[in-house]
Length: 242
Image (cartoon, rainbow, N blue to C red):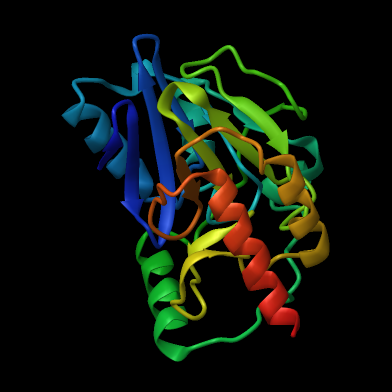
């Protein structure tokens, strides 16, 4: 699905994976769930492209619903996944995320999330394959020239990815625009966050980013700009505490 020129989403906004497309090829941001592979190839075909045009995969963090087809892309096309080293063990499935940070739960949204994940291969996740380290502030020499911003909290190695070429900031699970546990919409803190206070503090690192599109790992694309998204996330976090 086209979001804007050079910017596409595959899958459903229940679990997001994004493509940045320019004359040099394609950068994939987050690998969603394993069966997103067919969605990836289908979207590339609609663009008149193929897997040989994919130049890079960037993972915003190492959770299982973000590494879906990373192993296959590594195995079949020799493309490693860029990932902050603090999440390497998570992406290799060597550690499991604790059952913490859930907050309120509604039966309908969580059932829909689990059902969708299972349909798309979420019960058979494979380790991410070859990983390539990234660090805070690094600008990658791949399509879109994305800049990596370390935003720990949801996981230790969570990053945001700023791509000025498409006027977008990809935030992974540093925020959500539709909570998979409650269905509540709008920029909010994401559930399943390991260190909620650290996640809110990490917003300081992105609040001055100049980008219209704010793109979460879960929920619809948001075009209200980064500063307003950060304001709403902070307000929602404050309300949760009160």
